[in-house]
Image (cartoon, rainbow, N blue to C red; front, side, top):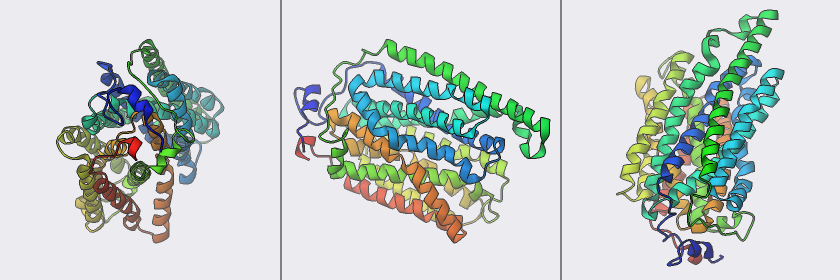
Length: 435
């Protein structure tokens, strides 16, 4: 394994992750804002999926191409994105990501004008490409802006702003994108009335994303003004293709696998919530009522991250990770072996267990990567592709067994592997030069 000379450059007095962090007072607030933005925009998929499904008369498989295209960007852009960030730096990388997101929003104009579903999917892919770039910057940067021993706490606190975005944006998006047309169904219209509905509905989507494009342009301009604010930023070239060699480090490879499994489990459960709560044996809710309870899932995640940010400053991150992963398994077992509100709310409370998983897995996997942090972030972002793969597998399991409860075995298995990683990573990582 190559010697971590980049880390030494960032910290002449030591190697690995012993640096005292990048000297950029006040920059943490900027990073929190990035987490809020990319979290909120990602959650808007929950608003646009049902609208596109109705607008283009799609089946569920076709409608879920929205999520597939979105998460595929992580697989395709993660490594090239890390290479770009290493070349131009964190702040310029953030500006590039924000501008790419803006372009994705603007592509909704031709997509709406032509009423072409493929163009909507392309626009979402470009939007997701920008999100990936911003996330490649935000995750390692927040860990470097302070003491290494409190990195898990800082990233968890930042992820709380991500959850805040996922809670707020769907509410605002529903007002801007859905508006008064939410009570109209394309299935009840035909001829000129249907054409008028599609035109109005497309314009509602455009107006929502145009507002986002303007906001992103402003944020990108502010970021560009402070592009030289970072002092002491350093990156090291990997021995392989943009850090693939890091997968030869067991701790990092195990962590990357757990990111794949965690995102897959989280998206799988989130995708099943409405149908799960509608079951007569659970809560027997209508689609609308069940949909409103998704707020509980994300609100729990947000609260859990604020709590976790404090807890992780005093409790071993690996032990906390193992504990919440076991908690998620227990909640799945409770949900699948009970009925009524107990069954429903125990599933929703898994959001509380999920809260600290991503940031804790990330920091434990990338511990002491030093100047290889951008490489590690790129690989981790590729692993987020689990959000496209495992939900499909969970859905297939539900179709095969005819039971949503049995399908939850797959997410439970993911949490079991994450428990093992928490136990494995409870001890400090070796210096990169010694790994």
